[in-house]
Image (cartoon, rainbow over all chains, first blue to last red; front, side, top):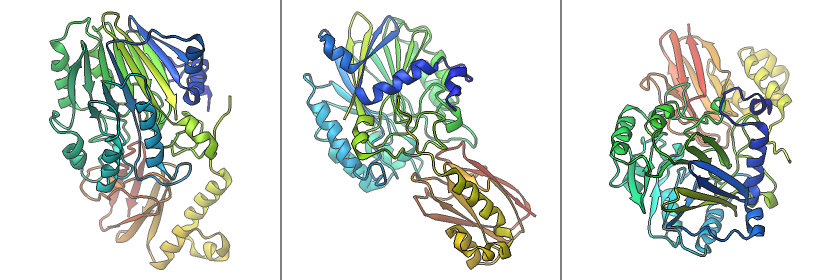
Length: 317
Length: 130
């Protein structure tokens, strides 16, 4: 199964060696630096040992993902507890993040009480603002109506939006609605049209950060880990010098660089999922209790204005 | 590099698939009572009823042939929620089924009915009604 990576069947640019390196980061945390559109990554421990101290920029933010409030099975019967640990970790950062992005699957079953617990827990985050995009677990049964009412106020269409922070343009996309039989994540015509217009007015030198739940690159289509029309979305971003795409969904950190676009997936705060093809299905991975926290985590992103650099640091809980 | 596995026992899965396939032959099931999975019991409670088990992100059996008027029950044995939705989104559409939750639909008219899980659309299945 691992020869999927070796043979690179999907022509996705991920080789086995690079992939395994990514997996090693999952437990130790990742430090990434984006320079001129190229993301450089180091194990967090290496960075700490070398005492890389010049990461402070104009903007730093944190990505949280896949909290799955309501999940209560092995390997994590206490997902609210691990979310709290993630929050404590964010609150312990030397500089509070300007904002937090939650890239979906706030809940496991889209239940009102699960959304309540999530919202209540995140109130203790020391940050100015939290931005959300839904995961497929947040839009069960009602096509996302409850999520939209609670977390999607002021957004466009089915919940997409953009905002500017310190010269960078952030775009939140929704790719978990109206999924078609046999397909992957979907953005849809209306959203793509909006995206094209949204970025048309921007200078090509504007750093772009796109965030959505399901990866916008083909991680492992056999398990639904990709988005059918992501290529069209990315075609609108080709002219930009620096594009960073942040996703969740696959409960593990992975990175890929393609031209000026750097793709990054975040850990879950709830439970890990297996590496592509390394299990019968992408169901929750049951790991020994002492290993769990090493496979969960948060992503910390620093943006330095003028240099077009983003530094991404993944930390385990 | 440690390779984490969540692989379930393949032998038991194959065995379960075989038992499900054998559900159409009640005598075979009765001959081996100890191996009866719950899904087969449900089928036995109501003669002519068929059970499709959702396990490891797939519908099993993926394709079944039934007589018109047969009730099909899906049961989710996964740790994550799944749905059962006809490709036209109209004929049948379950709510999200959590672990061990069921959904039933009676196929009255002959035809080929394709369906999928709207949460994980790579999961597809087919019911052929004769």
